[in-house]
Length: 162
Image (cartoon, rainbow, N blue to C red; front, top):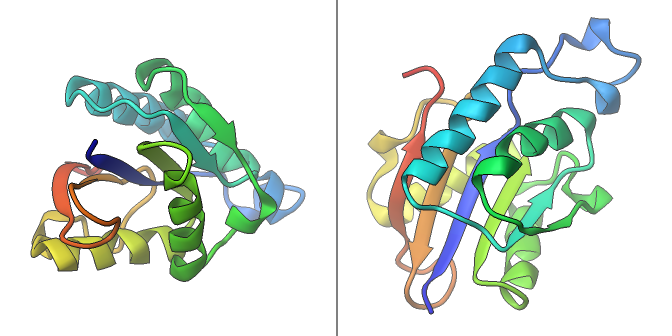
C-alpha cells in the first residue's frame, strides 16, 4: 500500500510575552480558524490518516484538535522528542511511525517541520509549490510508492496565506 505523510506546522500562536512559557503558548483566533480550514481542505482532498505524531506543546495540540474532525480517527502519539524537533529527528519519528501505519500526520514546529517539507518538495521537484518559510498552519501531503522519503509525490499543499 502506498504511504502518505502530511507535514503541518502548528497554527498561529499567541506572542511569547503573552504566555507563561513557550510550551504553554496557545492559538490565536486566527490560528484556530486556520486549523479548521486546513482540516477541511485536507479532508476535501481525500486525505485521512491512521497515526498522528503531535508535539506535546499546547499550540500543536490545539492545532491537531481542530484538525481531528476532518481527518478520521487516528491513533495519537505525542512524545516530548517532537517539541522543536530537527528535520532529522522528525524523519526518524516518521520512519518509526511507518513501521506501524501507512498514513501519518505530523504536527510540529519550524524550522524542523518546514525543513522536512521543503526537503521532500525538493526531492519531488516541487519546491515552488510550497509557501516560502512554511508559515503557521501550512501543510503539505506527500505520497510514497516505494521506500519512505525516496521519490516523493507532492499530493496537496495547504497555504493559509493563499
